[in-house]
Image 1 (spheres, rainbow, N blue to C red):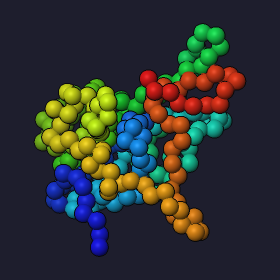
Image 2: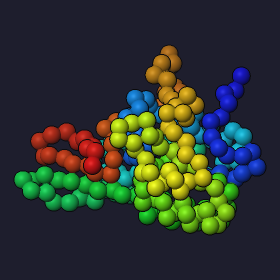
Image 3: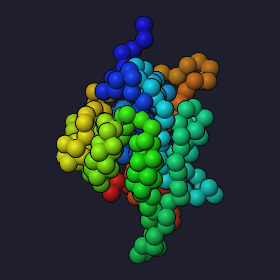
Image 4: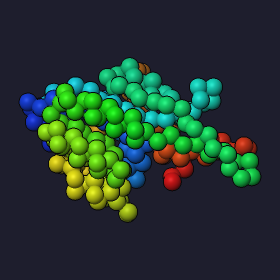
Length: 216
């Protein structure tokens, strides 16, 4: 028997997902689970008309190993529209390097363009900077669901974002429909990649240490 979908979309609605990859990963990790992106797509394809699922992330230069590259490649071949850009490097004292890769502009531009073609936008982010984006979409008659969580301390969604949205879907409530099972099949053919050490848009690296993402 098929699982009941968990979302606020109506069967007649054309829907687009906008996933801030780093933000979603942080929220899921704080709640203690990994996301099965195949199940996530299925959930939002059930009982509504899913047109696009955008996934946004910044990546290291192609010459350097990026811990999320396997996930990005899998998503690109399995129904997601990938939007990526290189992380920018900033000089730090004592020979340290810091990288930034904010995707807010890309999400905002794409969401405004898609707003002419959908009735419902689902935004996977808790970033309060998106409040004005939600307001602009609502003026076009588009309903907006924000997916993040208030079940952590501190909450990972800005209060003004949650108030502005038509619906707020806590990631903890969505978890049963999108959680990744860690049981691997015998042939391992359907296993999904998991982002490793992928926390947020701030990436720091000391020359003699392995790469890792740090919360900012």
